[in-house]
Image 1 (tube, rainbow, N blue to C red):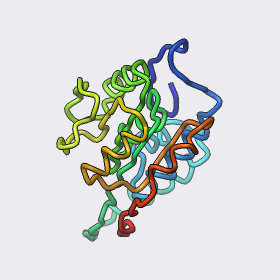
Image 2 (cartoon, rainbow, N blue to C red):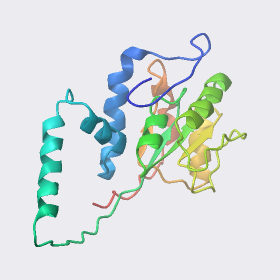
Image 3 (tube, rainbow, N blue to C red):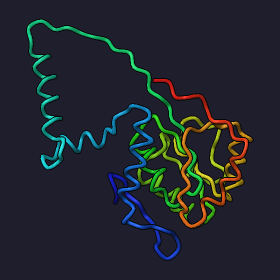
Length: 204
């Protein structure tokens, strides 16, 4: 388990380093907060445990809201908010240390997750089901995701990294963030982004 997500894997055939959990957490929050949405699971955990550093602050907010509803005169304010929809291309996704929490804990994030290793791809699909990343909770049998299914927030691919990026380009899939979690030679894949046009900035 890591930061509210459950992972199943075979250490003999896939890469996993528990010491990277804080880096996973940092990047997941950095990307997801780009959409201005709360991690609902984290907020629930915050309310349940007094050891959380922000517990008192959360309690004060709840008490303040309660006082407002207890007043004799109730004022209803309607606020319209726009949720930014974020799309991520995870080129070397592995078993999903980024893709799984992004799509299971944040409703405004869609991830196109790819890995060349068939075993990693197998566990990526399995972890997607375990963590309920997709609304219909199906495990995809193809190796090129399900680009046309809007309900699938985690679209999984079993392709070469360069072929994956070109596939997204051919499908005209716009993404805001790229993750290349392959420290040894990820830099070698940068040439595939030549001529890439970044999407318009996310609206507030």
